[in-house]
Structure formats: C-alpha cells, structure tokens
Length: 154
Image (tube, rainbow, N blue to C red):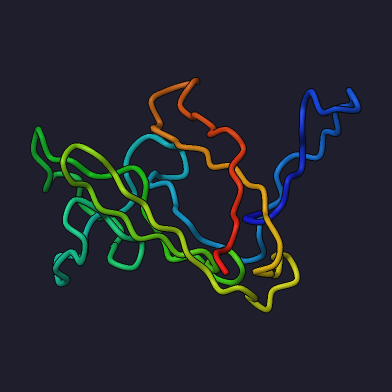
C-alpha cells in the first residue's frame, strides 16, 4: 500500500505486529518472461512494432517466441516485462532522470485518489512514510530509508 505503516519492530510499546505488506487493489507492475517450466524466455519484441522504450521489453509489445533458432549467442532477452498497472496500484506516478551520476525520482499522486485503500492527503496534517530502494542483486538487495515526513507548505 502506498499510504500506511503496517508493521513496526521495536516500537515504543515493545510489541511487534506481524501484518505484512498490503497491496493496493489492481494488477500489473511486471511479469516474468519465462516458459511454464522456467527453462527459457517465453516472449520477444514484436518484430512488427518498434520498441517504445529502448532497452526494455514491455508486456504491451511482446509476441510469443515460436522459433528459438532465430537467436544467436550474445542476444539479450529481458526477464522482467514491465506492464502498466491498473486500479489503485496506478495511483502513484514516478518520473525519473539520471544525470551527473545520480538518479532523481519524483513521485506524485492526487490528494484524493477516490480509492478506499488510499489515504486522503490533508495539507494541514503531516504524513510519515519510508521508501525502499531495490537493486535486485541478491538476498540483500533492498535498502530502506529512515522514516520521512511529508509536510505540505502552506
């Protein structure tokens, strides 16, 4: 969920409430590009369609691989296929840029999304949140930020 603290270890009461993460309603995000037995890729770029995002294979632009002999050594087929989310999962949008060796990511959404599983932002209140950064390099592939506070300027 994009708007709630669910589990806190070492809280002031000394208790631990194991609730796990809650997903927003909807579907999407990405899909694995593998056959049912996970032995090889299932999809490739539709040859009739130019890739809309170079370096990525989007779920909206794939076709099933029918003949694996068309590939040669060194060809790369992505494992993750980004797919546009739907429903409440698509409330938060992100714009990112890489410049001077650094990433800048801007997250934004409506104050009131109209979704029951989202908080309604009120400019008179402060909202605590955290962000986790994933690099997908193995078991220790995520780093969480310290608690942050969203405080609207008035």
